Image 1 (cartoon, helix red, strand yellow):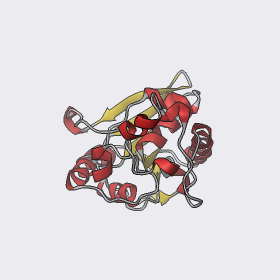
Image 2 (cartoon, one colour):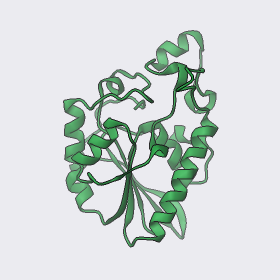
Image 3 (cartoon, one colour):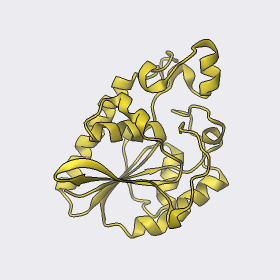
Image 4 (cartoon, one colour):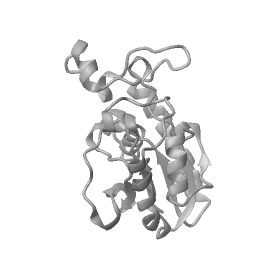
Length: 209
């Protein structure tokens, strides 16, 4: 079975400050664009048969900078809908909800257009995306590349490994990095995580995207 490669978009002002960024369509920072551009040689070395990208501009710009401008836009790759916690940091949330944890507690309700998602709802969306990945893998000899967001890709990884959506908490994911989901003895495994060109250390970043 071919591999699935994941790219989290480059840094934004909101990811740098730890604000939960779901539907808000913020652009990359200069550092974020540099993070994405530096991934291009790695991505070009891969045999990619199909590529998908979130509709949000931070992901689409990252896809262009890593050399996959024709990636197919898919709304199922959008970030977790944070509802009433959009733009709010974890520290601010925990002032009124001590011990709050996104992957188990979900979010507060938001406006009608962005009401928020539970971990289970994000897991269902990840499962839909994985079904599309499997279909793409069956129709191509190359790997599949997904360009999206931190929390969603963490849930997708958990579901790929057979874990519940809350298992996404186990996989810290930095901005502007590449991850590889492969197989061993026909079972899904993580074959590479938070990969940067030349083994560069991760800059301290938030898990929010």
